[in-house]
Length: 522
Image (cartoon, rainbow, N blue to C red; front, top):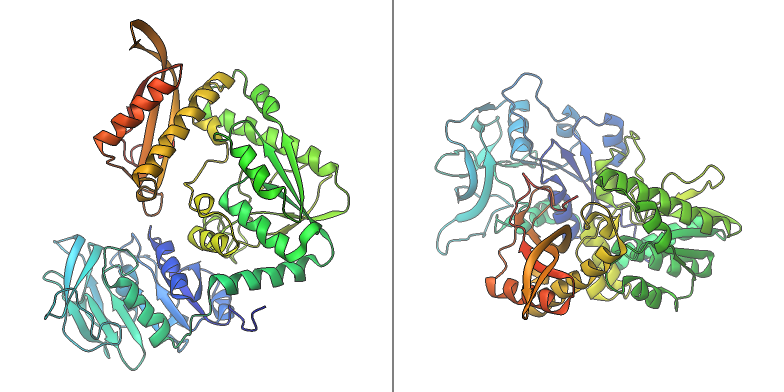
């Protein structure tokens, strides 16, 4: 076990509502330092209790020129730790310390070039233009700083933004108008590393092996010699949760895998083969008929979700009642769930994810929660999964909705539709992997459309079903662009699906972005 406390070094990120605040946290974690995101108006005592060695102020959609717009707690500038303001964070820091911000007639959105004019620990020696002190960065702002506070110097400017980077050496305050957390800012990762490691004097204790050791230690401390029940879905989160628990407590763990009949091709068998040989109690509950019966006659997507959720709870509860002496329910809750539910330290809500995390259990089944992934982002969970020995093909698999294929069959779910969809989706995934495109897109899947279209198969007229292929690229899944897969690849996939699957006569490709569409169809 690690002798070092991996939570002893930490950065606090105060969130002003930016869509990419989580990216800041992920970058800091990648650097090897633990961090948490708090809303800017969180209880001041929680900020003090967190006792960070550095504070980052995020971007946000508001304007500091508007009355009542968000401000950082004054304590931030009294705590005696380095502060980095990003975009809105720079602007509110400037205003709060005596500078000025004004609306600009020229909005900067997208690529920009910052000219570095003064020495500063975050930028010294960095360049994206050989022989010039210039950095390629990503901007997204309308307002801009027009006067910097006393004690600050101008470090960098663009053609339209005179204070693109500022610095107070005495206080160790730094401000950047651009977003170093996004990949479009080429030196952004190094800038953040310098702030976290060089300026805040941290060492990078946050690593996959250290996280695993810490999680195992905490599980053993919480659980002791008692028993734990986990609803295993076969997804990354629940699988990593299972392996951490197995390492920590062995056969004190029981994993219940509910096969709802809404999984991908051979997925239930794969989960069974992976977990049955492990030193844990593995229960395989084949409930596919029960789920199909519960979905009969239902076409509305929300009603389908509710029917799937209720049936899952019923089946899981039935299996749980067969067990004796279970005190804990394990869940694969991850940090974005906590943030989004406002549960992070504020106590406003307690997150219960759908599907493989089990909420709404009957009153006779009361468990304490074990959530070993609660502090981790999805990419951290994946890295830990690899370190624990999970196959990379499983760990790096695209997201899969909790209701499974139940929401990828449009309208009423029928066994015939599911079989056709499974086969078509398997061909799509196989060809994406063979072509190298699987890991170039963020999510890809097939949707079954319950409509028939005319086709010609050999010398015969056919009248069979339609499937749609969907592939998107995204950073945060809040917005997404449809992936421009090569026409040749799409044509090959289409030919395989139509020729190899009896019952599908037409394949279409979804070229809708998010927004206005969503990534999933239901």
